[in-house]
Image (cartoon, rainbow, N blue to C red):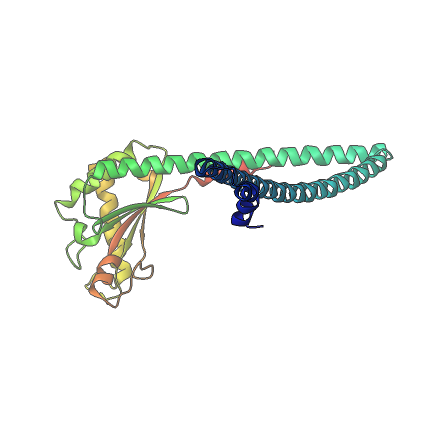
Length: 291
């Protein structure tokens, strides 16, 4: 029934009777309008509450489904743990029948494992200590030498060994093996650090490029590389007091290059003198000896 028809049926008896005034009729109509608005608001509120309830119901249903999935997963884990527990109990039952001889053998094996583990830990500690000493040595060398161009001198650690590479253009005139006067200062700084490490032994290596060399009495790059190495060794020993029993001089010729000899830059990089801080193999081999 529509709103208008409802009002008509409410007011019809009064209208027909002719006993209702216009003022009273308007009042009744206003009251009816107010009741309609109230009922409509109540209806809207009820519908909103119903929607909220439906949303809450859907959320609870999803949460229930998630909890059921978690419960299924927990059941699976519980069953898995029960099976493992049963297996372990059976294994323990099997261990209970180990003979005394077998028990003694197991004991010895465990002791050997413990000894080997301790041995490995000692080796690792020694290697860590050596790495720390190498890094300290590198820092001391860099601090002593100062700000030289990286192209002229390079200090690095490679596979646990400290290398100091000095470009031959810093030390020698091209094709010569006499040390330049201003190069003595660089060697003095290197010697100062090495002298403070009296236990160290080191090798001075001469390296050349692959350009053929023949200037009697030197026959080739082998000779030149050796003469350059011995020139550096003499300065380190005689001028700066390094112990000669700790020094080795070696010539490498052109055969251990660090760059391609096809370019001037590559050949320049290959012409170098390398100081190699030798690892203390006697200490390392002592660790390897059976205990």
